[in-house]
Length: 92
Image (tube, rainbow, N blue to C red; front, side, top):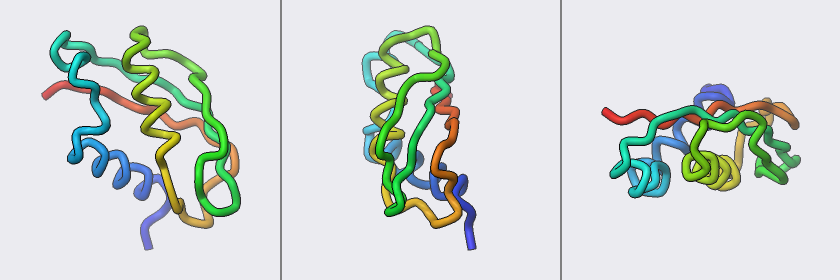
């Protein structure tokens, strides 16, 4: 059974495949970075609250990281109720 971090990665990957993860403008500008997002998870495995704990250096990426984390759904029961999630934006 996958753990909660695997599920977060899977959901981020799905967002990326749908074009909902990495902002088009950030790609066009060549922006890369990592934001650290503090998230509060409710008993249903949904994100109840999230904030930028440490920014990437780019508001555009920080806002995308918040959107990505806030859209997480149905996380496994072993997910901590409060956690820090690194959200990485890397161009290939």
